[in-house]
Amino acid sequence: MTDRHGKGNGARWALLVVAALTAHACGAPGEGAPAEGQPEAGFVRVINVETLTLTPRPFVEDIRLTSAVQANRDVAVSAEEAGVITRIFVERGNVVRAGDPIVKIDDRVLRAQVDQARAAAELAAQTWERRRRLWEEDRVGSEIAYLEARYAAEQSAANLEALEARLARTVVRAPFAGVLDDRFVELGSMVSPGQAVARLVDLDPIKVVAGVPERYVPDVHVGSEATLTFDVLPGMTFRAPVHYVGSTVDPATRTFTVEVLVPNPDQLIKPEMVANMALVRAELDSAIVVPQDALVRVEDGYVVFVAADWADGPVAEVRRVKVGPARRNEVVIESGLEAGDRLIVVGHKSVADGDRIRIVRERAVELPAERNDSTGTPGGDDA
Image (tube, rainbow, N blue to C red):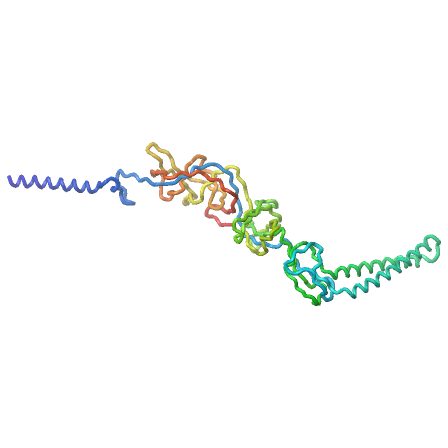
């Protein structure tokens, strides 16, 4: 009797232990989720994600370049006559118009030579006029005397014109409108022909120069739109057409030169500043554009995840996509996505095809406020 009761108690104790272990394994609601990487039978993983509803929109593909600013014209104005500087008309930093005097060279010797040549030219002209009348009207004198008088008058007039031109060159004038950036002579300095006396720069418009990789030769031409920004001028954007496209490729850099002329009335842009240039390469009227971060790189290309509605709730669905041109952190999808698809943009790196998802936020496409510079394709090198 005792043995039989003892065996019965032992069986009851075994049942109690099994029940306790089962209760511990089940736990309270929400506490029985399996550890990461150790799912149990019957457990369904649900991942929180954010989606972006795709809508076709315009897209502009740009080529991003680093460029440098140059003066539209930058010349050293030189003296054309020898002599001592007797007067200075313009100081450094002053604005001059085309033809304005910069410095004056002593002209006393040349002025005396001009007076002498003028007197000789007047005498030769009067002699020629008298010889002409005598020969042509009265047939007096010889033909050789007639010709000598004519050529002497012409020679004297030409000599006077040459000396007057030299006299005018004793005033060194600005060849174009600009800013006198520097002056290399002072009052009393001795100059000779060809010696630089000042530096004149034209800053309006200003010239921005960049080297474009040769692979873009078919895409860049005179008239292409360029957008310029400067790190030292935050918040300011300048747009202008391409003014010049180089005809040859530099063998050292494999680039060709482009120049853009930008209006600069306030002279905010100065030579040797660095500019960020974006050239329009192509324009699309309607394209599926997604954030570049939403792409997942695989061995043979790119995939994305979209939210698909199943009977028991939304799930992640993988899509293989073909990417097109990119701009900053946006990329055009040429195939694989359609308008209305809900692209997973947050949480896409944690899901797999067929995973249950919970959409915690749905976004709509926001059109860009303005055109931004860009380059390349996902994973590609910048221009």
